[in-house]
Length: 167
Length: 426
Image 1 (tube, rainbow over the protein chains, first blue to last red):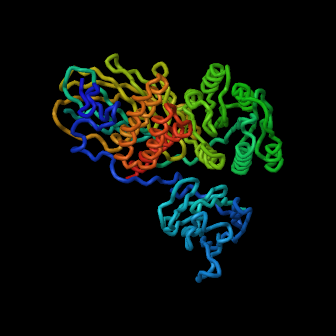
Image 2 (cartoon, rainbow over the protein chains, first blue to last red):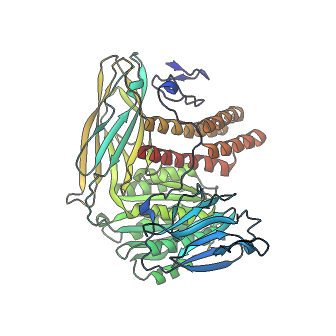
Image 3 (spheres, rainbow over the protein chains, first blue to last red):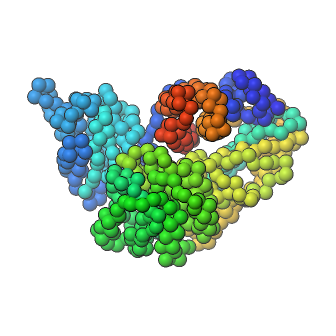
């Protein structure tokens, strides 16, 4: 038998990680890269075939349960999501979350963007490096990367929930 | 040290099987050694683009009193979403159950979507949870068509423990699997029995999952339906005829989703191959080697049903050789190491739960502390945080927090799949 160098647990030769304390066994650390360092959690649907077809779809509906608001846009439109009020300048985003308690929910001024994907396969959601982040179906998106957006998806801008429907 | 031809691949045919092992880490000691084997089964690159089989889907929905409110509402919304997603070739039946079962949508082709969705609206909560009632009614409805012409799958949704009928449920799941019916099961909230649902889906190699918040129901069901909609092969079974010096310790599926695999008598159900996503399983073997230069042959056979083929039943077999050379050669593939590393963390959590159930809270707390550290070392910071919270709760109350336990268990499983997938791509 083999002994774990950290906790003395007896192990079968060939064991890669101690089943008692989780330490990596042998000279593995020198020979091959053991998983280390920060790892980002990827949303489950990064691949192209995970687009819902836009065939026959004309509008995108965004529903905000918090305020009960529902807004529709033509499917080809670029929808900037953020918040602006009379006191702060700049152009008003297409989806202005100011009155949906955007500040309290941690929505940034320029928070995210929904637009058709470059190949026209479907819609994508992009986080614009917002302060409190954007989650798609509970996965936090890395900034500036377009992720496929489908009917039935749930987005959180900061902590504000928005449902997506294509019709 | 040792060397082995780490990658053997059957190049052509309707399924490709490749095997990778950890023999390069073995010493030449006359001792029982642990060997990890990663088996990948995938469709050929140029796929037969014939039409896939229609889906014969049965939804079995818990409508017990505890589902009242957003749980049942979201499940209904998800069921309607599924009706939208299915094609007119597909078949559907929907059962609701409490302590008895009702047929909400009798087995039908998905034609009049509005009418079907209307029926979903009529489900109202009341009563207790008896899963057996739902399963029985679901399987009965499903068998209204000749099963061989469809991908047959039953999805069970529950938020509670079933009482007194679990063994009958498992027997039923076994019978269903032998007729080619797959079962997936999702638990909502944290008051259901995860070990029971794991066992329920095991005979068919199906998926079990944890839905923490009612809002996530749609997401999980959509993923499942997407997978089922593109099935390339079903009823994939691994048969082993390993020599007596080789003993299978455990088997875990890593892709298309992470799930413990039940060891049967010389065979195990691996489930389905969905689209182009490979099916990957990790086997842990205890091997008695007799030293340097010896080769041990591991004869294996994979059977599966590939509906797009003229002869759908296929069988592939080969012998994988494990060789100990006794010299320092070769390294283990990073994919294999990473899979073993994360699976080991998953097991440490299971062991801590075992410690608690044996009344040994101190041992469990220490183990959870180490686990927190290991998660952090591996860069899995979200899991490290959950583990840390769980450790505190354990130390303060002597009990396991149900939400934390489910989150850790199923999020670690998810990491197994997502890390493997990203590593295999790179």
